[in-house]
Image 1 (cartoon, rainbow, N blue to C red):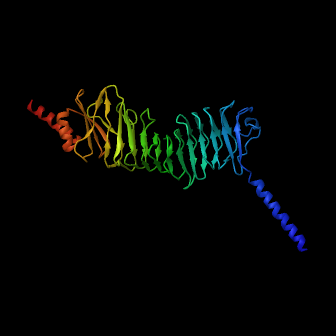
Image 2 (cartoon, rainbow, N blue to C red):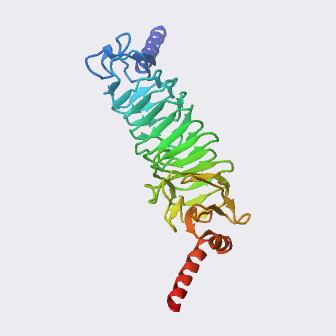
Length: 377
């Protein structure tokens, strides 16, 4: 009896182990060739070796490389499990587009070629996931929505560009360790950290942001408004703005915060691409927030309608930076206390008044002068 019971117990253990083994499908690495009759991931002929990934159990590693006959592919398995070792690999310069059902990202995503990849699937993060774009000419645009809990985040590495265009809800950190992150969608649940040497761009909305590298609203070549919950610029960081004309987000790019902005002794890099003079008294809210604190370290020389201008602080620590253009008789005034650049005419008197009381005093003087002339007549 006892021997029989032991045998039955052993058989039960063996069956249980087999069941676990069958349910935990081992991870497989499969390479796309697109030779099937359609673009579905479940079509075996689309993969080298003829066996399609299942997207279950421990997940699969999907490789998209050279020799593909189809660059657009579709996942038809909901919550497709991607392996923890490496989830997705893009190994050449082909511009792949992934579409269809949602993906569960258990591991990193890598790109080694100068391709422009689009991932339109919704993505669930199970932890902090690295997007490594080794080639500076490569990009991955995630247009699907990214979700995840407090430990789910993104670490952008490599010299390429990661673009987040969806309505994302993951709560963990977003770290730009190297290269460029562009946020054109919504990313408010995640705080963003831009390390030294990395760049943040975009026209979307993000959470609390800390910048040690470079921040540049817009696309980098076209104007736009990047919205942040709050912004902290760190020493040796750079805030870059391009001004081609008036109109916030149209003629110039702007960083707009629903909270506060701390300039933190950042470097202000102005690019004046305008071909004609900016209007007198026009203002440009580069840092747009109810509360702007701190000062800037300086402004490199600016080329304004063909003339090189040098900015200097009116008095040390005042936060008012002036550059006079003798060709136009205009002075460009950046006021760190409100993050605004203003174009002021009549430099000889304007500079003195800007040093004493700011641009508001300049405008008041001109109004009083106009009224006096009218009375005399």
